[in-house]
Amino acid sequence: MASWGLWLLWICVIGQRMIELSVAKRNARWIKGRGGVEYGQNHYPWLVLIHVLFLASILAEGLLRDNQPESWRWIPLLLFFAVQGLRIWVMRSLGNCWNTRIYVIPGTKPQNKGPYRYLRHPNYVVVILEFVLLPLVMGAFVSLFIFSTINLLFLWFVRIPAEEKAWQIYGEEMDEAMKKKRFLPVFYK
Image 1: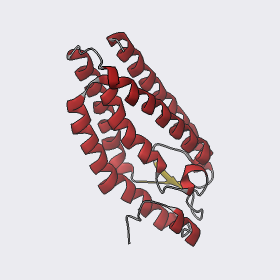
Image 2: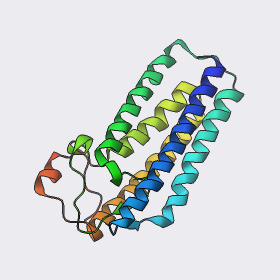
Image 3: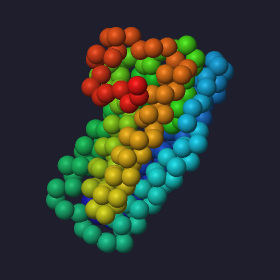
């Protein structure tokens, strides 16, 4: 992929993020209209900052290095597109409840359809994979190491525990079937 292709991919990812923010805003109104409560607002700006710096970093590194793509980069590119299919599946499964923020409608249970039948947090699996695949495609190996590490630590120690805590406080207890079918462990006690 020539450098114009990298620009095009990066612009498409930015466009996708802008659409997602618009969907999240619309969904937030829907959730709040049903008594939904936001949790973890204090860490949300940090999440946004990580994503903005990540996207800026891979673009800068990918273009400043002016590297010609290796013949193997089509593999992470195809995997990146496949991950977008998982993202769409996640968003469609959650419907109006999908958001970039943490919202819980009090008295409801966590989702148990679509990819949520198999994983506790498939949306975060998508994000983790994107933080690996996109830098590989862009030839941004320093950004890959730095931001994949930051993102993983943030998700593991801040974001996922906050989401689990929100469900613990505001939602109903997960049923036993949901607990047993999920691959990833609970992050709270």
